Amino acid sequence: MTRAWTACRQTSCSVLHADSCIPASGYKAAYYERSRIPSTGDRILGCIDRHYAATTGLAHDPDTVTVDMTAYHAFRKIDPSTPAAILELGFLGGDQELLTRNDPEIAARAASPPTCSAFSKMTR
Image (cartoon, rainbow, N blue to C red):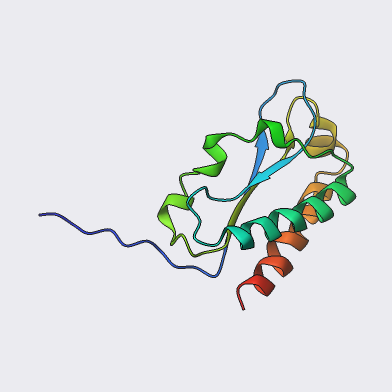
């Protein structure tokens, strides 16, 4: 018996990760490469760039965005019309103080404005 799979339609999807333990620093973000709403994805990334960088002090590192981010497994399970983004909060190697020791809530708070207010405004 073959079972048809239907993509899940959500209001939005946000994914938060910390990057590898290499001695690098910075954050990066991406949206689904097969998104049907790339202009919304661009606006979400712009919002992340404004809020996350300003709050954490980390530099944007777009050169390290990988296919593992743009084709993230969860993105393949949602409808391509769903606003979705993945944010790598920093590198566990170079940004370990910020992410785990000093005040890990800084990164969490910094990720909140783009994932909450920007996503909800863009889906209305």
